[in-house]
Image 1 (cartoon, rainbow, N blue to C red):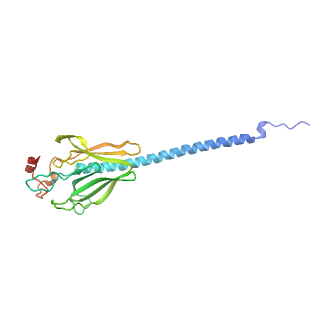
Image 2 (cartoon, rainbow, N blue to C red):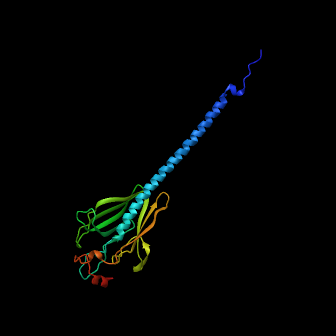
Image 3 (cartoon, rainbow, N blue to C red):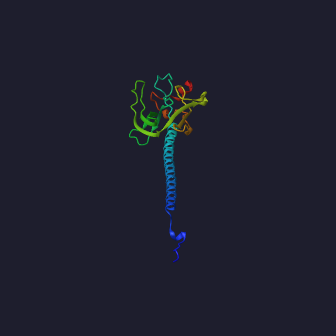
Length: 231
């Protein structure tokens, strides 16, 4: 009787071959899972970055439109004196007058405050406003209508200069009450990377004349002749 001989192919896979196949399949699945995880994280980072950039762009747009519309208003003073203009600027806050019209029951001159609030490594750029006080004995502004323009792990700062008035270097504060700044700079830095998200955005003020006081005889407004003698 002849022995029943079968080929290796007909005998099937050995246990070692099956285990090797399972290990290879596991490695492939692990690699695919890692690749998909990396793609997912990259997608989330891109989505967060786009959302963050959109928020920064909206904040810069509001900042730009506000600064371009700053009104040149004199501080309350006797008619024969000049005590400077209504404006106060610091590295983390600035207060300036605007003529507000839209979405207001009582349009007119308002004080607007842009301020930076920091808490737990998060910075918030807040915009508030209040009716412009009239008279030297007016109470402090009661800020209202708060709007968050930007929030995140940022370092937000303002800077000021007036090149035509001789102040050519950027300053982190503006206390020269007799002169308005000509340009205001906004910088937004990512705290984690140290990179600028807004690389020194500069907006010029359109305040060549006291347009908001033209034809106005209120105490806070000056005449063109008085302005020429005090500058």
